[in-house]
Image (cartoon, rainbow, N blue to C red; front, top):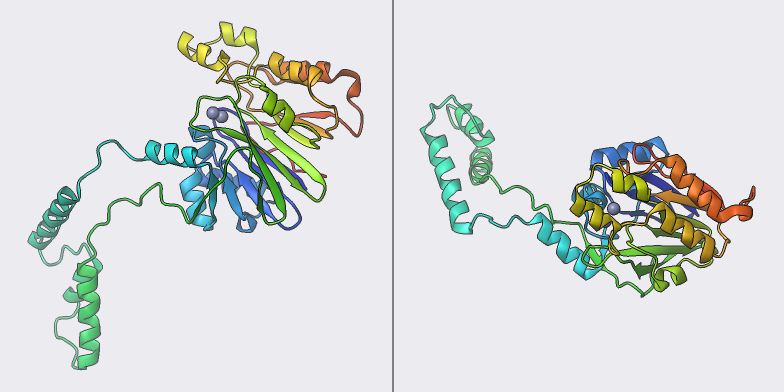
Length: 330
Ligand SMILES: [Zn+2]
Ligand SMILES: [Zn+2]
């Protein structure tokens, strides 16, 4: 099995999880272009992806979702409340009514008709304009007319619906499901989104887990993170840096709250007290650029793991915002 973190942090999150037969992308929090670029950098072929899974609807997890899913033509897995929240987020509060839209289309047609004949705007007008005498063959004539009529009818479509996806599949936290040979267990996390979750992925006897964007470590998350071989775990902020940092008071309160993000201390506490010590790799992720320093996150985690760090087990890595982390293969 393989985990490739393409990006991790408050400006965008995305991770590839792969077995030898199946590949899924967890979150698509960078632009489609950037995600494809990063996949190319780490030799992950986007055409091989089977599905996209979404943890929650925050922008840093869905920014490139629609475009990427449509481009690859693959299904997107959400919980139903997350899908609904995402659709709401993308649907502007005031949209044009159908009558208004028709009216606008009509106006645009009139404006086109008023232009001088050589001010070609549409392909249909070009066809008409370049055929001063109709061809003699009635079949060709009827084909051309049909084409011209069809194109004339091509009214400017409203912008593609950003919520349009090739396919949507629902899952529920706490209920296993499978994609190919990967068994996925989503678990609820405490975070200020509609129905946020983390995931455990299991295939070929290996278990990998993602747990970021959580205000604290509740018992269900601690229970989900047992017997994990590769764990991507949030280590968002240093408490002192956050308190003294640039964020407005209300944002600081949100980050610190029980539906915000895990501090280095909270992550260290989990690693020292609750973690079973069985992972080959612990990847620290979703580090705040403003309120954390990679060295601080690493130091806190390594101290918490203490003597359990060996050449084969409990190696601690840092996922980055600006570049992908090389694949971790087990
Ligand atoms: Zn996030
Ligand atoms: Zn979030």
